[in-house]
Each structure stands twice: as structure tokens, then as C-alpha cells.
Image: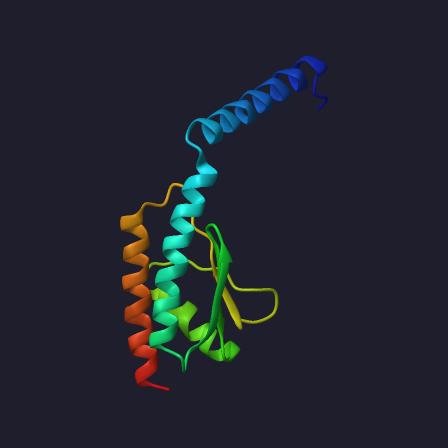
Length: 132
């Protein structure tokens, strides 16, 4: 089945309109500033948790809302990720192991939602620390 040039032009126009709308919202709402403020808050709270659980964490790194949790072993990282999944929090692993597990929330995450993620993480870390 052939697609007409007119059909492709309509799709291209739609894609361009969506891109322009996304750029306008990014500029209007200054989303980069929100990512910075929310990321700084999230990272500072994670560093406090990491200090409370030095047997679990090696370090916390990140910029904006791309945040890495670095663990002493991949097994610990896997157990943290599994505990978070069990509590309804999705995290991202790295290519081949769970030595580093990332938080990658959307820009629209609220500070209240970040606090809820931190509460669920604390609960996970409490459970894990009892079995180490």
C-alpha cells in the first residue's frame, strides 16, 4: 500500500506542530529550572539517606532529575530495585548489572511525589539493612 505525498505532509505538519507546542511549554514553564530545583532537592535527600545507610550506598550522583544510586555490590542494588518495584516505584538499572540504579522521574513530578518515593525508599532500605 502506497502512502501519498499529501499524507506524509499532513503527518509532518502534525509532528512539527507537536514539537513546537513542546518547545513553547518548555520555555513558558521554564522546565529546566524545575528540573534543577526538584533534582537538587531529590539528590540532597538521597545523600542524607546514603549517609544513614553506608553499608548499602557507595555514593549518590546526578544532575537535574537524572540521578544515580551507586551501591557497594550489584546484589545490593538489585535488592533495592526489587524493594522499590514491590512498593510501586520504578527505577532504571544500567547495562549489565545493578551496581548503579537510576531515578529518572518526569519533569512533572511534584515535591510531594518525590517525598513519597523517598518514604518508600527508606522503607526498602530499613528492610534491606536488617538482612545484611
